[in-house]
Length: 515
Image 1 (tube, rainbow, N blue to C red):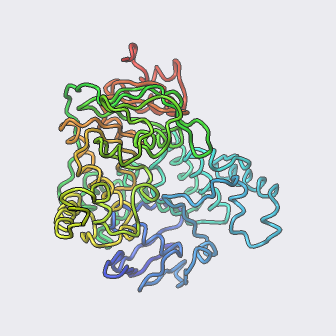
Image 2 (cartoon, rainbow, N blue to C red):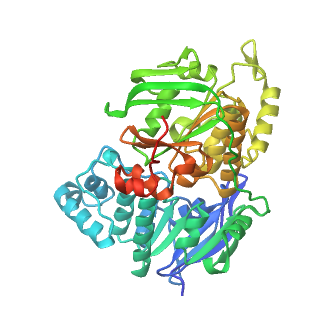
Image 3 (cartoon, rainbow, N blue to C red):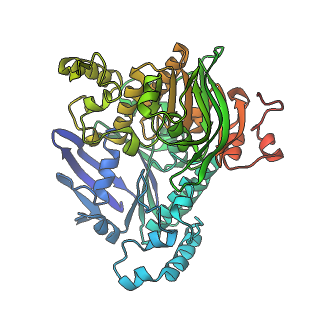
C-alpha cells in the first residue's frame, strides 16, 4: 500500500488553477521525482502536502487513512519534511542554533550543547556530516542544504521533499547528495525529488511523475522512458531543441576589469584583486560554488556593491562605483542571481517590472508622463515572446511561480539589447523548455555582438554556452581556459579549490593557458 496518497487535489489562486484534480501516490522507500514546466504545479502540490497551502478540494491519505495537514507542524507530526529551493535557515545563527528553531521546550532551545551533540549524531546517522558550531552564513550553499536535510530527518521525517536540490551544487556535491538519497531510500525513507534536470531524474528515480498545466499527465519508470519523451510530456509539444553554440571569432574588448576587490555583507573580501577582459561576441562563463564571490562580482560590475579598489571600464568610460542607473544607461544589462531580493518588485505588476529599467524613456513615457497604451502593447509582446505564465501583464509579479519570475527578469534585461550582459544563474529554477529558450537567446545576444559574463552553478550550461571558462574560488579565478579544453571533472575540482596534478589530469588546465 502507498505510504502517502494525494487524491483529486485542486488548488486555485484567484482565477489561476495551480493544481487541477491531481492524484499521486508516494510509496514507502522510493525516490519519486516530479517534473513539469514552470507553473505546472509541482511546488504548489508539495506545499499542500507540507501544510504551507490548503487545497480547495481533495484528500491526503497516509497509510490509507485521511489526514488533515493545515500547517508544517501537522506535516512534521506525520513525519513529512521539506527542503525548499530557497533555504529556511537563519544565516546569523550556528547550525546547532538553527537546529533548535521550532522546538517547543524552552529548556530544549537553551541547551546549545545538547543540540550540538544531536547534530553530530544525526549527521553521522544519515551520512551527511556538518559542523554544529559553524555559522550558517559561513557555509557553502551545498553545506547549508546538507543542514536543512539533516534537520528535517533529525525531526523524524520519513517522507523528505526536496525542491530543486542540485541547482547550486558542484558535480562532486551532487554525486554525494545522490548517494545519500539512495541510502535514505534503502533505509525506508521516501524522497520526493523536484527537478528540471532530466539526466538527474533519470539517474536517481524509482518513478517519475510529470505535471503539465496543473494536471498529472503520467507516472513512468526511468527504464520505460527517455529524456526526450519526458521533455515532450512536460511541454506537450515537440519543440525541445537544445541550444547549440556556433564557433565565431570574438571581437575587441568591451569591458576591462583591473584588480578589483569587493567586500561581502560582513565587510570581508569576497572578490580579491580580480582582473579580466570581456569581448564582443563572447560568453565568458564563471563557474563556481555559490559563496565564492560570484554574486558580489556581478553586483559590483553593475553598481549594486562598492568596489573597494581597482577599476571597471566600459570602453573609454570609467564605471567604477557608478550608480546602477548610470551603468544601465551606459549599455549594461543585469540578471540577478536572486530574483527574490534584487530581481523583482513583487508588489508591482509584471508590466511595471518589465519597464522598470526604461520607464523614463520613450516609448514608455513622454514629458515625464507614462504612456499606458505603449506600455500595454510592449509588455504584452514581451510576455508572449518569453512565454510568461499566466499571460497577464497586469498580474502582481510576486504571484508568479519562481520560473516565471525569472522569465520577467530575463525579458527586461534582454529587451534593451545592451552592449554587455551580466547574467547570474539565468536558468535556475526554470523548466527545460524555458531553459533552452533562454540559452538560445543568450547565444543570439552573443551573435548580435553583446559581451556576456555568464555566472552559473550549472556546469552543463557553462560548458555548452561559454567561449572561455573562468573558475572562481574564494574570490579569485583559479584558471581561465577555453571551453573546448574543459571537462566536467576538471572544472568541478577547480570549483572545490583543487589544483596541481590532480586537476591537470582531469583536464582542468591546458598545458599552455591563454593570457
